[in-house]
Length: 191
Image 1 (cartoon, rainbow, N blue to C red):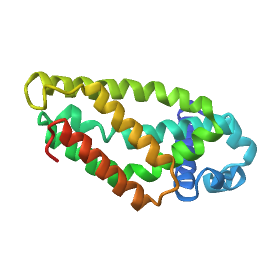
Image 2 (cartoon, one colour):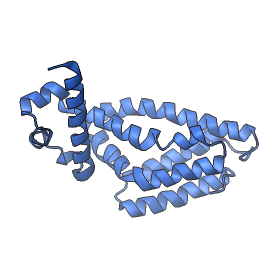
Image 3 (cartoon, rainbow, N blue to C red):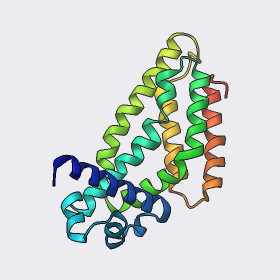
Image 4 (cartoon, rainbow, N blue to C red):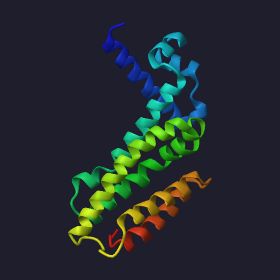
């Protein structure tokens, strides 16, 4: 099998596995079914993906990339803190809650080492957002009398709290939206 074929097959398998997890949760990822859906023998599947944990790691990073890095793009592209924050929130509440619940409530619980790996990437992205808000603060675009790092930390903890609770997706979004609005308005960001 050529290297490019193996990469394409691995990508196809990862896509199918990602869709299975997003639709049925981590417990819905059945390796026999994954092999069948990918058009592979089970033995070939494992040659392509390595272990199931290797595949779950790839999916965890995909969830992170699709749902977090992409949603943080407004902080890179938009110079207005209110507009960037609003676009981030719209994307976050529209797309990320289900994926984040799967990541935190299922994948991290079963694979704690994966959480540590993804968390390293999350810290890098969070630091970028903190620096962006500090830049806006130095430009006088948000309140000068607040500690940006504490505010972002509070938002992260609110997020972690509501995502691990057993609220419905709608209730999680409503609670997060209200909580984020309070903190962000306290920072002087009109949303």
